[in-house]
Amino acid sequence: MTLLAYGVAAWLFLAGLVGIVRSRNLIGVVICLSVVQSSTYVLLLAIGYRSGAKAPIFADIPSGTPVVTLTDVVVEATVTAVLLALAVQAHKRFGTLDPDRMGVMRG
Amino acid sequence: MSRSARLIVFAAGAVGLAALMAWGFAGLPDFGGYTGRYGRIVAQIAGPDRAATNTVTFTAFDVRAVDTLVEEFIVFAAAIAAVALLRHQRGEPERAEHPDDVLRPRTSPALMVVGAALAGPTTVIALNVIAHGALTPGGGFQGGVVLAATAVVIVAAGARVRLPPDEPPRFAEFIHGLGAAGFVLLGLAGLVFAGAFLNTTWAGHGTTGALLSGGAIPLLNVATGLEVAGAIIVILAEFLEQNMLVVEEPES
Image (cartoon, rainbow over the protein chains, first blue to last red):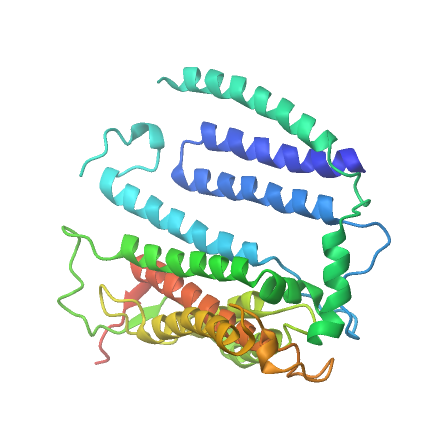
């Protein structure tokens, strides 16, 4: 189980990096970056998980109450929005989303 | 650098990185065997010290509130960056000639019905999630996103929106700034009334389990909820303006 948890984190990180390097589309780069980021969530959960323990929430919660997320998930979403905005600008300026065909940056 | 050369350089680096990761992970505790003191201590003091039953929110908005302040400002900066990047560029077709155009999403009758039906419940769920942050799973970040979803649902229902060019929606921008400023002001209140920035004890404990308990944690959650909702609405409005909305034809 230890191997699986940390293995998934390492796999997500490296697979995302491979995706960023191989990508021919800026939107693909942004998506691969979020894959890399999600590896950090898996790693944090893997380190912090304690077998047999309950979530440290001491209220009587009716069963089925959902919504446990990390503040970082929201932050990631907004940062992704900025990166996608950059992709929109790049497409306006170069007429392509392929990083290899964008040529020299103009002022 | 050619594409294949780049891949070879990356492969060499990635193998090294994988080896370093394997080495580092080998030194981490076994899965399920976390024995750190931090989590235990925080879980022990959340109830007695702050009357907060959700240790996760207690950690984020009290013990590590400064971290959360910084995260909030990342969201704040990201929204402003999106506005700056997506603003009208020189040489693009001008919308400025008709700044009062009313925009309308391309929508369908089914989407309008579902959107209209969901608008109310989504708002209630959002406020519920924000308000109970100190008690049960939830809080400002999660509730803020749901609150922003309300705006999306309303637009999907066919609401007509007026987005002046070169300007984010004023109301969303207002609550966006209000939330960010509110978090800092609540932190300063801690400095003035309790002697430390972002100390939450000045607001009183309340009864454990009551809606108004946990010191200033619920207030910080409201500030965060406003900030996050405003930021996401600002970002979505900028993207919507790009090309997802059509100018409404004047009715003849």
